[in-house]
Image (cartoon, rainbow, N blue to C red):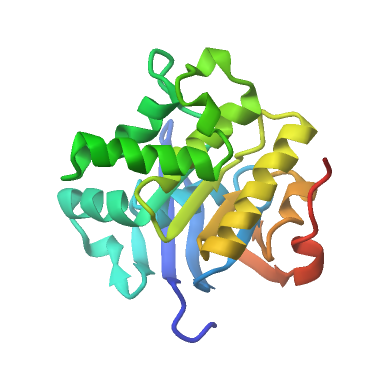
Length: 242
């Protein structure tokens, strides 16, 4: 196990009940992840990849065990505490983008900032900088229907970044994209990890996408951890195809 990891799971168990049957998705899982890492979570359907992501992001709670992020046991937090922690510490990126159709890119990115004490001018500036970072400063006034799938996902990444979280959780972020758009998004995630030191966890079924990470967490069906495979840093940071 890693010494002083950013993410520390011990004995984490998650059980779902469906139709009177119980399904153990995670079973006494122990896992350490380092600060500044870029991890791809891979495994067959039912191996608990998305469940694990949701537990680490505070969107769900386990039935046993503990989830510690930077020494804080988020498993012990109540609802309001967890919501406040999540808003400050975590940025989420989903496969389906989850943008609001009637809002512009700028307005979509500003949404997480409505929960902060920032003024309207400050929210606007933070969102502008986030869109500039993902290369969409010139698309601030466009609505989702006026953007390509890759551009929509970059807006979603800007929204995840706008509160400057240390941890970015991405669930199949390239699942709905063509290869070129996927490579652009993966290149952006690599840059956020490499230049801005964001810790990134990415669920993916795409072996080519996983190779862009610094390590692969191989999950096994039944909720146990298979192994962590460290990737060659030079290969992982190789520029994506243009």
